[in-house]
Image (cartoon, rainbow, N blue to C red; front, top):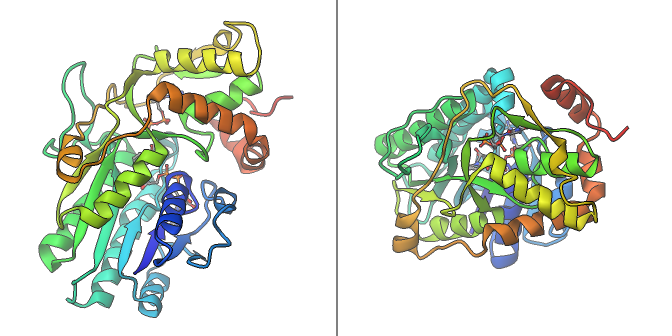
Length: 353
Ligand code: NAD
Ligand code: TYD
């Protein structure tokens, strides 16, 4: 099995690469990543020496390059994670999201179709998507695989479009595809622009914690390593043409999650109780901010036997420990361009001075 994993230097992709190279030594794993601000080969230091792993730097929007890569390698499977992934950046620069998330996905679909040329036995194209394609819930309800798409942000609209293209390649050309839509992930190696690592870093540096609006929005959080294990199960056992929701049945209002995180940080940093939460600053709400996501993953649990492995409180504590124990990583990824981004987003530099 020669498997192509796209976006393997990013947050979730690096956990997926680590999971597959270690668990399947007989597979050859090629990690294709263009190393944007979110891609970091430092996320894979512990596995990069393994003989079944190799890295290729390249951009999925470059059709000629992608065609060549597929012709030269004749992959048996693709797990496609490469994407622009941050909602706030999609509000500021939507076109990049169309290019990578939509055009990049179509380039991969085309290349797979060409190289597999109708011989689909043993082949699989697995597209990793998000629950955000389903839109926003009120206080009731849950997303199932049958919930109609209703994306609101440029990010979720681009992911929704890519999901439609993947289904179109299945229905039109018979490409053996599978899609999963997962809830918010958390854990080691997440770039500190997303809520949890951003707030861990800001607490560490005693910087304000910018809570959008009242902090009433609800997200359903999943330990990233559980996402990687779900991807393994779906890649190997999922049905062609099917969609699987992945989630932890773990809904948290932002402000409650932030309270828990502040308590953990006070304890770990031996600060006075309440010191971290005194950094909470309510700022203008995100435009088009989805109120609530909640995902029903019972199909995956019942049909393929997957379930999440750890409770959120435990996972969050491990996450904090990881960031505090890997401050070199944090400092490396928050230098340079990150400072410009942070200044534009939040109006002040992110460094401690
Ligand atoms: P990330 O931003 O951390 O990583 C994305 C990776 O893709 C980076 O390594 C980046 O360098 C690479 N990349 C970006 N543009 C590229 C291009 N044009 N060509 C090649 N590589 C490119 O993202 P993530 O949080 O790890 O998300 C991975 C996937 O999972 C995405 O498809 C995302 O939509 C999906 N997802 C994420 C979450 C979440 O909570 N983070 C939840 C559900 C689904
Ligand atoms: P985020 O981690 O960006 O994930 P997503 O928008 O894809 O769900 O944000 C999670 C929640 O936290 C979301 O409701 C927005 C909120 N949030 C803040 O309140 N402040 C911040 O600085 C960030 C980045 C997010």
